[in-house]
Image 1 (cartoon, rainbow, N blue to C red):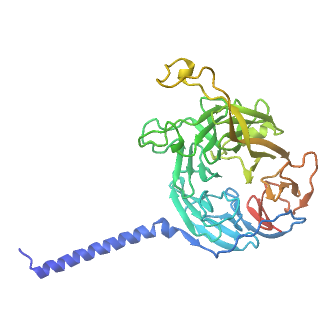
Image 2 (image 1 turned 180 degrees about the horizontal axis):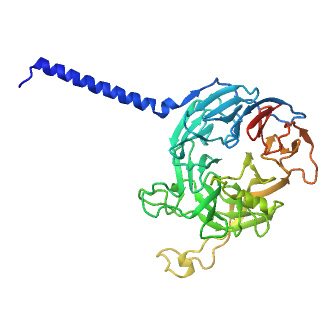
Image 3 (image 1 turned 90 degrees about the vertical axis):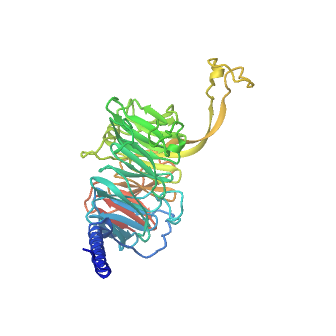
Length: 474
């Protein structure tokens, strides 16, 4: 039977209507179950960052307090906010008043971590490092959902997904941020584009492309290289591995799709049962070892030991710090950076490591022709003798000072460091820690709390994170 043109048009319209309804229904289902609908954010006003204090306070009283998830802690930002973890949400409060400024909530997704590498507040849109507050949420067993937020307003800047292992930790250094998982490390540049994936790749493009049999316990990042502490099944000592922050710098990077499969820059056997990373530059890495005696060991980019300084740090504190958590999570060395100095806390001991420019003499590696194992290149005169030493300028590291008896990370104000100690905050000189002098303690009433205390300075306020409580002192 042949349908008339009018009836065919009516059937076509009915079919088109059914298709349109199906598309709308599918879109509704996708929206109702999507991350977009599950995510809510309440942005705040643009408020100028507070000016940093130039002198330590003479007294401190509690001005405000808010709760936070003790497993995640809080982030004190120089932009004038303190970001806390409350359920599935990252909530920023004003550092001066404790009043809520903004929030970001992934809804049903677990909050994995919040972090920031900001040490100053020139504006979050300034490129060159990962600026702002990075919020990491879970999905499908990974801490994969990452959003970089403006610290002042909470507005979204960059977003990415990565197979970050649950129980991992954020790390910041140079122009990069990274995730330290127990078996997988990733680094991202300031727009969250991945530069490195190192470890047990979840879906390697080629067989045998994974770095198996090792667990990562620490990571530290600089502009041109990063280092990890690794414990491997075939090694009884802690290994430190130096790697490039981008495969483009690797001399033997693959030409095919497996861009992350290249040899590390150096693999170092520390000879110690435990190791912690205290400092890094483009030329050096400072490693705290437990054996044979506690010391800070400096290695160059080839993995050669170039310095060793014994330090007054209990060996057991190093061993205890260089472990995964009871649930298999990572615990990188807590640290605060101020200018050229990095203050790390291992156990109850603070170790100050300072970056400095230095001149060193090196001897160039002789060529094959000079060694006599290869005929000289025609037209090129071979050297008559060994290569002469040359002087190079490098970014070196040195041990500044140590102090024991700390409860957690210190706050830095001008040329002073405020150390969290029982009963309050002890003020010492940032340059030398006032050796041999019992420092004055600014009393702080912690209402009987005697656990870990991390301090930070934001404007005129001192922020203390005490387990599940964040307190503003002024």
